[in-house]
Length: 360
Image (tube, rainbow, N blue to C red; front, side, top):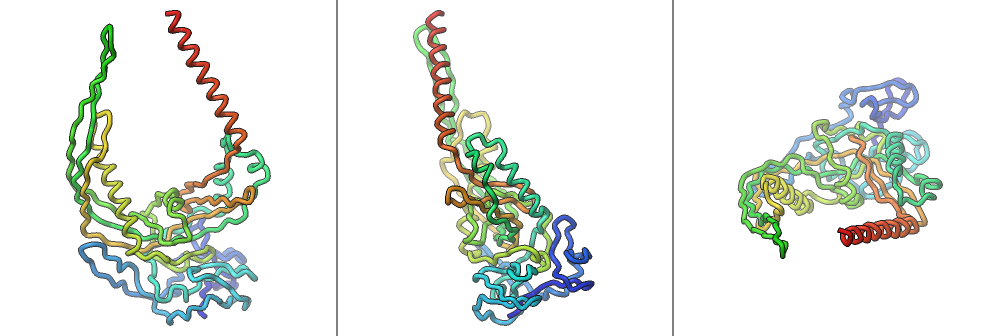
């Protein structure tokens, strides 16, 4: 069983990627190493792939390691303890000695990522953003703030398929304009209807689609955008000290979601060119992709889990930008008090308006 760990050349401690200095760092002697310095640990592989008329999903390169045996039990090279993971665990920590392990067998038969965006923000930043997320939430139960604690927090490299394509589009919008006037007897509103046509082309780069069934798609899309300009060629050294999942949703199975995002974005972009109308609604659209290609990448995400009244709440933070998302519980008592107060105020305003109208 090949479990790969990066050892410090100075003291043999387990190296971990330190997001604050963007280097591998030994937690024992504090020696820092450039990621490029450990390139010898990675094998040179060739990228195989050909274009087609639809999507070329031959992304990434093949790992040149022994065929996977299917086992999910591994031996820690530091202490000899057993590491147990599921079929998609690619990087984890030894539960006995805490050393960081990259499980190479999990990549056997799978694709090596083309790119990785390294973590820029650490665990303390995720905790701080979580506390900030709770602030100012009027309807949040007080006990959630006072007694709530984080059950689990971990940095995960999430697998994403990145879709690049050019798109030609023809879109017809239904638009309206309104005009209002009055005379001594009536108020008039005139609505005019228009058919507005737009045609053109637009390019898309690195449209991300979550490749893991264990990550909720809406949660992963909520922490976007990621800044792809900071992506680097994949090196397993970046995984050290973090968890990582290999994809279990193929590029082919991700095409549907990619097309939905591209079509919606195309319609929105063309919609922004239709100005001077009261309403604009897409009535017909034809979007045609060409030169479509995919790439495989790991993106950094901090996941936080907490429990309130036996219900689990999951939060996510973009490990590159710090964007934090997650649903919170609502104090029903506060909600109904607030709703009652709002209704009373609205009623008082309406009554006052009617009374003033009678005086006039």
